[in-house]
Length: 511
Image 1 (cartoon, rainbow, N blue to C red):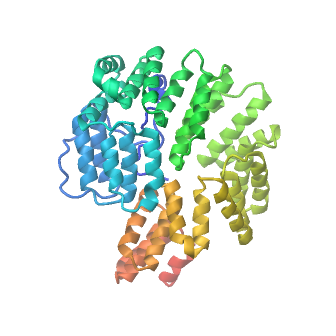
Image 2: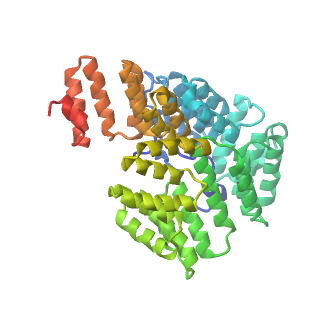
Image 3: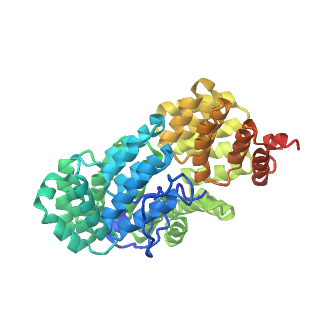
């Protein structure tokens, strides 16, 4: 899969623990924009409305973000505003922009993007998470947002944390009235390795706005470097106890937890294991593997976890031989390790050995009751074994237990026409990067002869993965219904290039 919406998706531009500490400068956010640091051309009012393509919104976003990095924040702010105001309406892009603007402290722009979202069934979960995770208690003036953006840029990108923070705290009125200003000051002091002042200002931010989870996140990072690093684990536990609805925000919390564990562990092998896990959650798979390769020790009980995580990373990297080898190593040490069991299940599922896969998935579920992944895998495997009734009973049960089970919403949508559109949108609301649901929303609209709406959904799916054969098949159906025979034939042929065995496309071409 390509980086998700490379324009607006910068994965996690919140200051990650790596940025905050200044120790791992090579760490990049998950699903990052490949930010260009060289000078860019002057950005002016776009001659046409930007559309959701890899060269349009993407380029305009890069220019605006580059200016933010270079501390040309006022121009950056205006560039982002122009982009939001003038782009061709697209809920997916607005959702991404709502999150990313809040991530860098442009809260007014985050609101602007959120208010432009047309279908609230797609976005309500995300907007709620953005508000509870990022938003300040007191609304900032635009001038204050731009000023604090300049301070933030100098702290994070321009190695001027001491100077920028010193100037900020002299702004007595802003510090006295803005929780976000106190957060930025705490971030600057942490980057300068002034833990006492970092703790002082983050406590002030939290006192003003105790609901903000991003402040709690920074508090945990500060505690992890303080005199009592174990306190950071209590803060992480509090964050985990809060209700977050979307998959991406759940990942942010998991990433933070692994970073804090890395900072608090004394044993070097344990530290490297948790650092490898942190890299995994940040989607830095190559770094994760390199770190985990140095994480083994003489203790078998520790090595089982290292090998199990390595098997997961290797599987996600599509290195199936190494995934099999490391999963078996973990399994030999501990036959109840849920991560190793899941990978062994995935390997057998991929080989269409569903009975063996089901055994591993059931064993994984028995050893991990905290995640929806295991029961979903069990239900999916029952489907492949022809036991659809049992599978869908499990999906219904999963939805009563877990809030993040977007696959369960999707599977029930395909089965129950009365809930089809509603549950497809719920799946996207939980995980906006779930392309299958976008594609099936397009299918629903094609059946209704709503081709303009179908094309919007297909455009998002193509942005997420431009090599999904279903995109071209449904584009072919739209062209066929519009009497565009050559366009239809082109798309059906493209479908078969990507999936030579896709029978519906063959039928359309009379093959």
